[in-house]
Length: 208
Image (cartoon, rainbow, N blue to C red; front, side):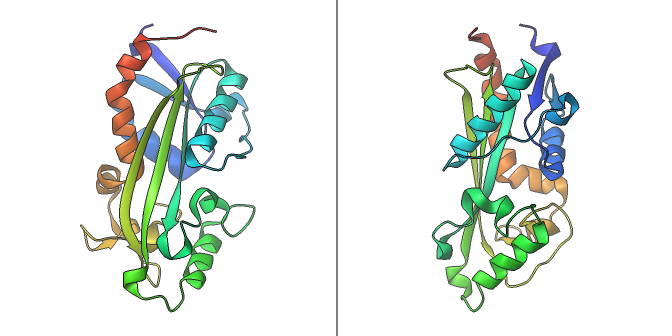
């Protein structure tokens, strides 16, 4: 298989994620094509963990396109809320997904909670499947530690970025430049692991 021309379907319709993944992956010799270009709808995320949902999404895209598929499942865990919103981060305030409504709900849930109890982390799981029946997909992860501020700040990024304070840079994720965020973030960590492991993964291609 010639990795120089390898096409991979990206199993997401989240524009923020698509933008970040394509930016981080732009120097890699693989062409990422969003599933919408193949008229593939979003999969039903019925899993109970980030890993399960990422596999569901990657398998769904691979089944509908016959291509290798890459999926991301990610979210924010707040310790005071026993890990919520977790896998429900995108739809925390209900459907359809609404970033502002999600942020408002999280702020309400943490109203009056002191800073030392507002610890949180972004989690990301990236799954790459050679095909829909791949028994050993490549699974990469990333974790980004911080805490939830009391009011939104910053205009960059998406999702919970305006609420996620990054202690190492003394600002929220939404106040970081995209370049700095991609270096620090959970998604950036997972994608760099993926890029490192990808060549060996491709060399052990398993066919249906």
